[in-house]
Image (cartoon, rainbow, N blue to C red; front, top):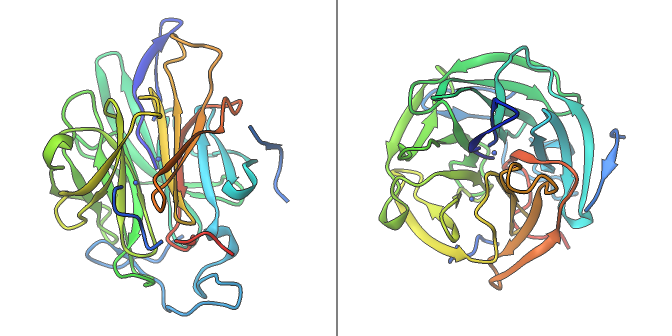
Length: 316
């Protein structure tokens, strides 16, 4: 989940980039703390709605219940929120010179990663690759993106609560006005615009995260930042919450897990070269915002993704 803002450093252009007032229903390399099926009409579909005794939906493996994050160094990490732990998986192996910008994860634990061709005068292109979250191996590009949608925020959401049919929702993010909400067609991989964001968030940039209870949320990088629930039919804002304790970032990402939102933020490194990403936990069930949840974690996150297999309530 997430979109980046560009800045220049050492004479080179570098871009960084992968969800409320009403709460939602409710082995592995270095560690640091501090293929989906495709169907038509945007659906990415598997086959069953039942759950295993572990509470994991029976069409999902354990790998699909984790949060994954992507760094500016193109490294993939597994994030375990309850442990406040990032486990490094390794570098993405996509055959591209473009910059990683955003990430979403489907129910097969495949990451869908947006890469951007960013120049001195703006973005010149964008693509989506598929990545195996077990080892960072890469397929694609599976999609080349249209103008206005080069730089994305992304998140999967199920079509029905506790269902398995899901769609990949997108938002274009740019220095100008965002084109609002779109969806990636599961058969053609074409972007279909759905509608503009509404109210005070019209035209604003966002990163997206979806849930297994068929909801979609955006982390809007306004001042102060806002977390809003988005109508998946047309992009309208259903409700929003301002979070003044969270910095307005230059690099950011967004994920939902176990009833809580996680906001990953970092400033422009030319303004504060000592800073890496802070992780803030926002708990809509009681309105609490823990801006010190994890601070200065040692690397900068530009994408985050979590599948709709992840729990919508904190596991007991």
